[in-house]
Image 1 (cartoon, helix red, strand yellow):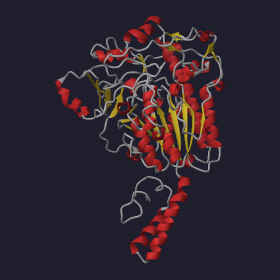
Image 2: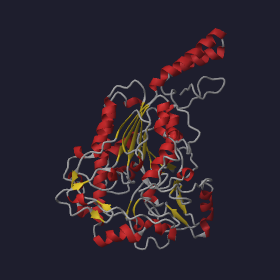
Image 3: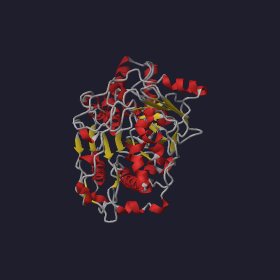
Image 4: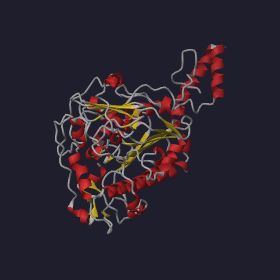
Length: 529
């Protein structure tokens, strides 16, 4: 491998995997290096250097494209991760078989708005103060700091569709083009009992796939992959499903017969050893109590599985378009889900908590010329890695404000040494760390949870109170952010999701299903946020 960018003083090429290492023939590089070593004439040296300068400009058009696939509210229920035995995700699994899938990947925050704001800006929630859905990120994160802006300034065309930023605050203005149409009216299928249980909305639809907003978002991505481009592109495609309502055409529900549905692992009294700060996040008296009373837990799981399967099909359409395009050999694929989702584990539903289910994500990379095929990386990473890694892979200078680690060494060698834990934050001073074996949670009031995933993958036994594990806890505490910014104010009309860990803020009551759900399922703003 060779490089023009970060070479030692006595060499032209550094040997890394950045552009243009992957596209320059090593024979040419060898010739250039030999000329410089022999230093036959000043003129020859100057000629070579002028060729390099001109070459950098010429090669800029050959920099890799990026297909950036975002999925809303998808937890780790994909087949290749082996969590829920009934999930069906052949297309996401196909991508994993062609690249590197991270088995311990975690969001920066377990809510749509702060997770996406952090990922797209490279600024942690603890630095920006954007911790929850009700806090507008725009006053504290300027447009010039956003990933799509950085790509555009580097000469890329930036195309977007669907949900990339949190819908309540729209998308950034810094795009070459953005498709944001949501589609028309969706009708509840006659077989549906109602709209779900309390705030957990689900029902089959009497529509076709083509009626779904995500289908149209995939169409846009397919069109862009079929076009001729005279410069590299950053194509961000954001799928809303499986975000609630868990409502997709009925054929997807039929793939998961209700009588065969398996509930996620759960035990009685799971919250008995959880500190009050964690229980306030779980709110067992809310969604979970209603679900148990209704007797419809399996229906909710069925609906979530159906919605995942529908989403997977749209991912498949997009991947098929890439494979049949002329860009397939020069396009980086990065697929991510913005956070996890709980369906009754630890008596909790939705995201808005710091345990495994609300924080663990699906995270897959395929980098031509770098990633091995079908490898699962066991190293713990979080989404602050995305911005710096994309900069590295596309030879874009990393902006000074970007936090997080470049994971390109793990893309090249998934077994490479790695010492940092993944970090997830939900509201000020509430942090959750994930290492290869342990999860450590520290709340704003100083209370703690500690779980040994080797012995307890479901996080049923909190070991934080055992002195034998003090060293383990201390090993994580050194990674607590030095800056823990004050909470940004709630935007007018914004819903701040869940309680802060210290109980200082009450969660707003979930919006009731609108009356038109009796006939129609809205695909307006609520379905995109």
